[in-house]
Length: 188
Image 1 (spheres, rainbow, N blue to C red):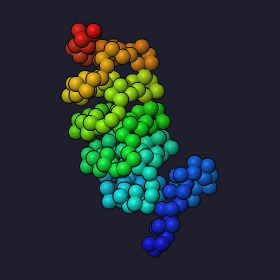
Image 2 (spheres, rainbow, N blue to C red):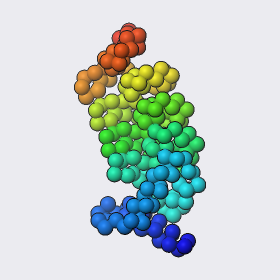
Image 3 (cartoon, helix red, strand yellow):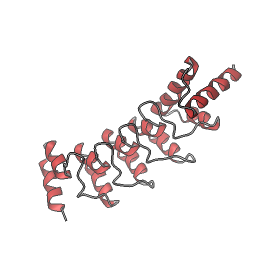
Image 4 (cartoon, rainbow, N blue to C red):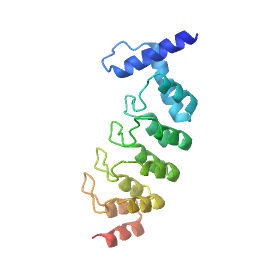
């Protein structure tokens, strides 16, 4: 049984390393599901097993979600911290829409995870495909504590998204006029 599990894991790794691997087996699909579910559910022990078998920590699913992105989005603080300590982790990696683990944590309002991710060597003004930064996400979802942290880390309050919306515009679009006014007054 152990041999079958190892063989299945190797098949998964082979398919992950070779995108042209056209005939994905049912076992390979099950292993991918198992891996990404481990990230969603905070199963650090299972993630460790995959990494010990040679799987890259930066492997992504068809939507571009990595274990770090899924763990951050699902509020798995311990798993996020574990993943951030894995060799070769790319905490700045984007999904298929250009969103990062930090943006996912902000969307969900998880300040602890957001702070862990902000402490990494990522561009604070990294943008997604809509030209949105982490600060714009925090503004859109009224994450006041995260807004202050990002500004303290040097986030540019003058940037606009791909629709030419400023932070003040974003806040106002959500009915948050006090935050919109705060950004208007902060303009250089």
